Length: 176
Image (cartoon, rainbow, N blue to C red):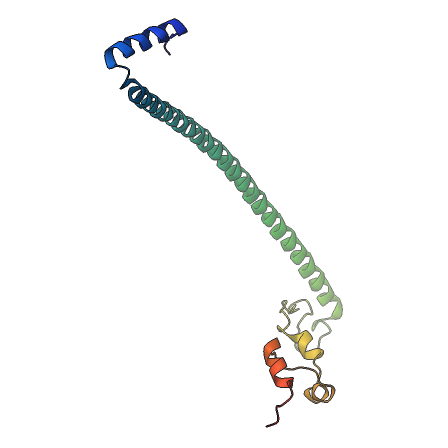
């Protein structure tokens, strides 16, 4: 910043000694040092704030690029999922059409009533597949449950007790 050498510092010190005086010079030098320290801290804080704002801008740009890439991936997955769903529907429709054609030909081969008596129903019309149902919450507990009479006979604890309560329960009685 300033080009101050040793000779210039000596000249400034001599002038300060003459102008300020030897009694006040240490206090003035201390105050000047304090002010210079504050100024340096202020400058370093401003530099750090500028660096932080630049890094924040870079992070924002990086965030936008990552979000854009994520949106592109999401849209491609959605389009592929829609294409797959369309293909699946087409395939199942083709299978249903083939099954209907097969059942119609078997209907003709059985005769006018289709071999099913007077109702005329085909076995492919109402095949119901049950949906998955989660087993009840504690079915293992119910299957492996030990009867209460067995627990009572063998001394199995059925109720939770703290250690202190258990000690108090089994402590011998005092005789008066």
